Amino acid sequence: MSETGLGEFIRERREAITPAEVGLPAGSRRRTPGLRRTELAMLAGISVEYLTRLEQGRDRHPSAQVLSALGEALLLSPAERSHLRLLWKSAGGGDVLCAAAEPPARDVRPTVRAVLHRLDPMPAFAMNRLGDILAATPGFERLVAPLGVLDEDVPNLLRYAFTDERALQAFPQWACVADHLVNRLRTIAPSDVHTDELVEELTVTAGSAFLTRMAAPIVVARVAGVIELHQPDVGPLRLAFESLELPSDDALQLVALLPADEAASAALDRIAERGPRRLRAV
Image (cartoon, rainbow, N blue to C red; front, side, top):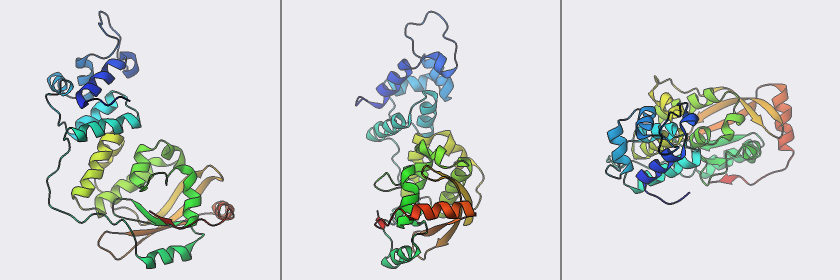
């Protein structure tokens, strides 16, 4: 993907997508095979004049919601959405002026790591208010590594669920998992520069799947329940989760996953037989 300005990138993608791809009639007397500005503006719910200013570089500060709508209208891939956001940020978009706030925790106490060590081979992990996984048992690593959950330098459950296509297969009841993660963010994470940065990122990269949940009535996130997980090595699993609050200034949680039935118990035993792994230190 070429390094190009925000407006130029939007124009290039508009000209590269055909009306048929977005369900519009091709019509006649088209000078290019791509979308007209009027068509993209209609699909994104913005004015033609505003789209023209964006493409010509006369407005380089659209809102995250506008970028999200353009990303969906242009059928951008996750990688293209991320690139769109980077261009937006480099143009000065999304600047937020707010009071200083404590950054999210990036580590856990040695005693918490010791607890996780004692819990192994049970899958368990500790996360901060933004959903960053800070530490985990080897059992958790063996369970979720094949799903791609831990691929990033700082794994984040929200980012994985909403922007990694593998999450749709990993969670057969993806909508329930997505609801839970957004409700958790909205109920325990204060509206500060760090939370707002993650919300802004997911608004652009995840689009309506994230935005509709952020706009829905707040429901207190569950601290316990059952989730379904499809693990490629052992197949479908029903796992009970229990979330424990850790005393801290960052709403840290320790989450333990237990088998919800005999089949899951046997599957976790098979995963545990693969041998120990080093306790993850993010």
